[in-house]
Image (cartoon, rainbow over all chains, first blue to last red):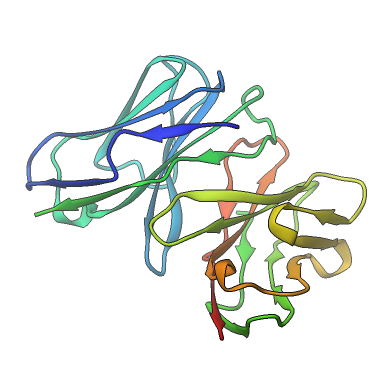
Length: 115
Length: 113
């Protein structure tokens, strides 16, 4: 089975801090994704990556950046955390080349609170 | 932009009763369709997928879904619901030439005794 592991289930940070959310997958997948999930808004794509050192903006990239130095690891960075970034963050991965139709496999999520 | 609509925000079903969750997609060439389930505090788990071929697809946990091109629908069904099926269900699509999923807003399933 595909395993997508997010480093923290719950995280509390302060406004203005730089925050790192880490995600690791064990299936040698090419594609990795970061979403945030908010009540009434569903899942929204922040960034994705289809190869090491490659990244693409999703629907809501403002206030975020990402890093993919190794194939199995995809990090989401909040450069200067703000209270409106309090949310559930979900990481996912999928196999195949870029623009493939393979299903995405999700981690358990990180519930981030910014105080 | 291509979209996915789940018309029902909440549905309550009695345990043992049948279930149908609705999903409609906006027109697009060769959509690939998925259903995911999310239990409270957890990530999303893939229930089933439709790429092509047989329009009735079987998934895990006794779920199935039927693709109907004429109705632009991909409804999820289960003949007999168990209390452990209470969760939020998401329908999603990938369009040919794109690698990103478009999700519906989700349907919360409540199971009554």
